[in-house]
Image 1 (cartoon, rainbow, N blue to C red):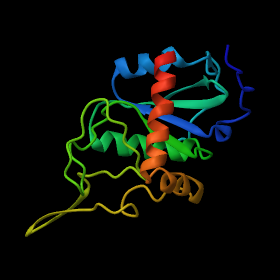
Image 2: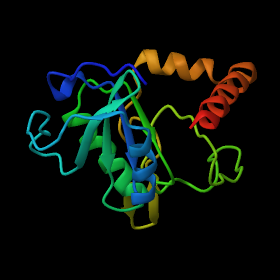
Image 3: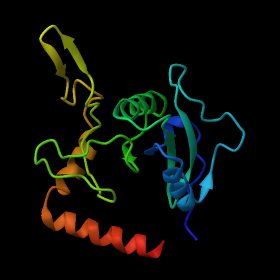
Amino acid sequence: MALIPKRPRSRHDFKIAIIYALSLEAEMVELVSDEYWNNGDETFQKAPEDQNAYTTGAIGKHNVVLAHMPNMCSNSAASVAAGLRSSFTGIQVALVVGLCGVVSKHMETHEEIMLGDCIISTAVVQYDFGRQYPGGFIRKNSIEDSLGRANPEIRSLNSILMTRRNRKQLKEKLEYHFNIL
């Protein structure tokens, strides 16, 4: 049995978020959840301007907030991430589970992204966000144009994952834990 953490005192105490669009993805996350914190009370209310729906709980020794997307598209994923950030200000890591309107090809290498791929990124960028000019549509694609940069700790962790050895080690650990499930 997992060591379940103490119930957080406020929504600002959550450090990990999981974002997903499909009910099947939600089911998979709920299967590995050990505890739920919002069972009918209003302890972890969201910010007034936030339109997202959340489930709070624990997975292993981590308190997590699960963000439910209204539909599957990049606009929805970016909007959910922005709302999540306004309500749960302590979030340090957000995991996007499933497709969630992800781009089908890597923007730089043009490699096809397949179902089951693990994508490690420094930010969420709304790729259909931009400005319409008389000469055409100009997409805003920088992190600053979208939701801002990850904090230095997360960027450092991401830097570690850029090396082959560390990606291999992560893959081996993920395979080990998925086999346990």
